[in-house]
Amino acid sequence: MIEHIVLFRMHPENKNLVNDLKDKLDALEEKIDAVLKIETGVNFAERSDAYDLLLKVHVKDESGLKAYAQHPDHQEVLGFIKKIVEQTAVVDFHKE
Image 1 (cartoon, helix red, strand yellow):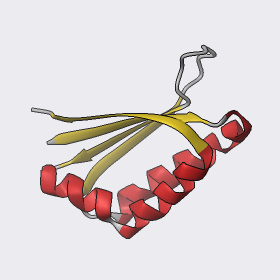
Image 2 (image 1 turned 180 degrees about the horizontal axis):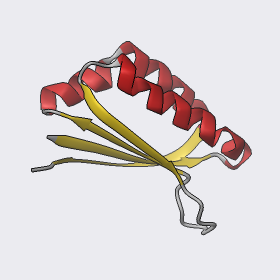
Image 3 (image 1 turned 90 degrees about the vertical axis):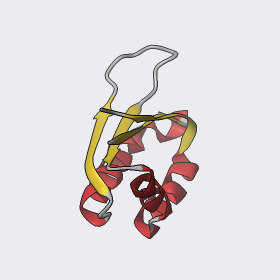
Image 4 (image 1 turned 135 degrees about the vertical axis):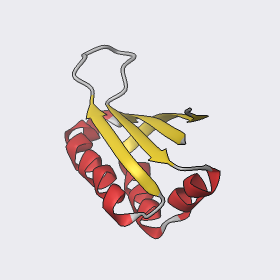
């Protein structure tokens, strides 16, 4: 299995949209066959170095990750992300 983890730091003027982004990401689980599971979480810590939202996507293998990344519904959410997020951090790893 592969886990795809993304941390999102919202533009300060868009912090009120964090739950909208969470909902859009959660909805991808039902829309993309390659996705086994999606987990999201909104950060509650008020630290200057904190990210606002975490995404974990579980897929079977690298071809599943590629299918997820290229899926039209994922691409649509990416368009929204680019408008409201100022920084991301990504980790992809094999989980046994």
